[in-house]
Length: 248
Image 1 (cartoon, helix red, strand yellow):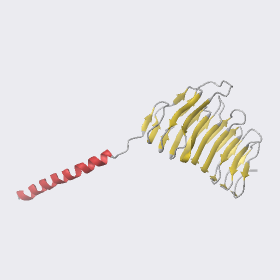
Image 2: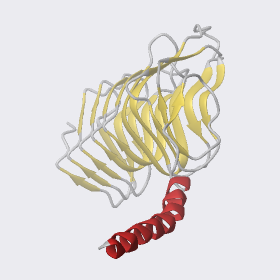
Image 3: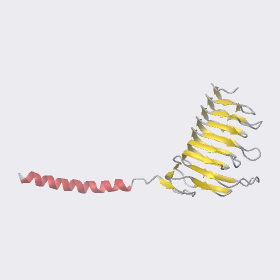
Image 4: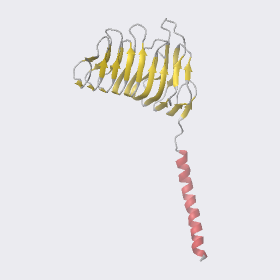
């Protein structure tokens, strides 16, 4: 009767010895994150990041969150990044909240950006910008969001830049479900080859600026553009699918 118990004990021990290295390897390969963000700084490591408090940026130029590597996700987690420098009226306010230059796979989501000359600037391919609230007010704002990739579900307002600047969203790719109001020059400016669905653009103030400006060919469907001083919907070039848009 003792022999089966002994055999079971030996088998159990051998199994534990076999599984231990495998489990250790699994633990070693787990990705860290999300990394917590408590202040403005450069992100130079791929991975997931999230804000844990509101941030302020007090310089007249520079970037609060400069990204220098591919494949970074930033979740603002409902917090706000604010530019607090005074408006000098000389055009010296060149601060950007979040920027990545010619990098791919950058995602920014879920929070607010206030009073930066440029809110989000992601000019590389495969970017995602979603669920942001980007507003100007006390300082001139040239661009709310610049991106190539997917831009969806954002709210952008009061984008009044210097001179002929002031664009709520400038994007190429899939642009859907955004609300833009009170831009100075252009509400949403779209690059060629994009899909533009279900956006709402109102009250672009400066003529000849327009609410929704699209380079063709692009798919432009189910958008609403009203009360824009220089035109509600302008399609540049040929080959656009212009369907079910409300743009009197």
